[in-house]
Length: 55
Image (cartoon, rainbow, N blue to C red; front, side):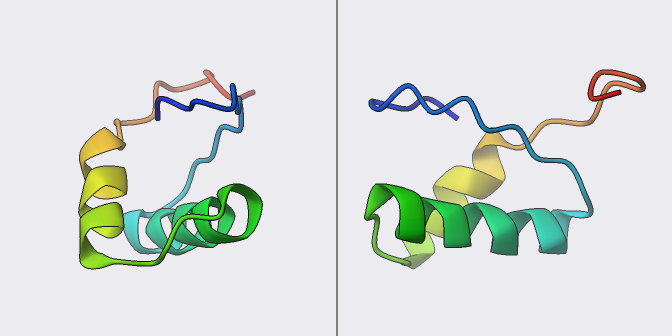
């Protein structure tokens, strides 16, 4: 997800787990508010994992 702070964190997992982890990170590390808009923006930025891309 684009980041003004240059955050380079990458995550992988099921959609539910990934959304929860990404929201937690956005709130705790970047000061975002947990809103439906934030969740939708994160969900829209998710991509299918390329096999071996995170290995």
